[in-house]
Image 1 (cartoon, rainbow, N blue to C red):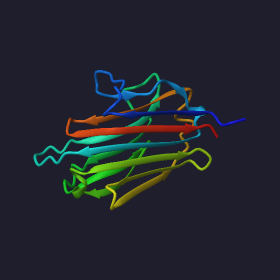
Image 2: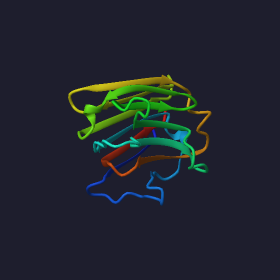
Image 3: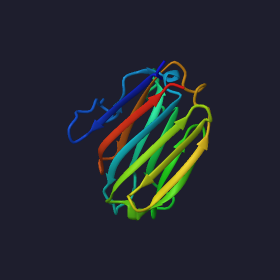
Image 4: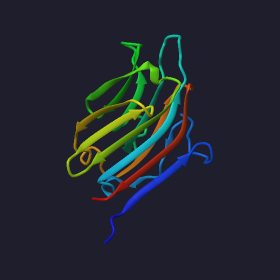
Length: 173
């Protein structure tokens, strides 16, 4: 029997994304156990912002279908308020794991790739501008945290981030 898959792709230059009033883009609800492994790819550009506050960021998240105000799992690329010379690439679950990315990534098209392997519970995220790549990883069993139906989503804040492409592919174990 072939593994079950759940996948979608948005080309923001061609496709009209599903959005709500918060500017979030959501998938249809799926059962988390349908995808023990997943990978997501987001292509985007963060326009440089020389004036504080440096509140810019992109968040990919998976959350239970009932609670869309808090994220059970998120990959984050945002500007560091503690050190404005760097962006952060992070994995947020119960605790956060971050790596610093130089501000020279601002203004370039970036590719964020995030993945989860259900058997090993390994979560990885990387961001690249095509010449440099920064990675962060963590180990966490998302199964107990994401029971029943979940949705995957993407949000940016504020408006100086231009997302051109987003894909999500999940496969049952």
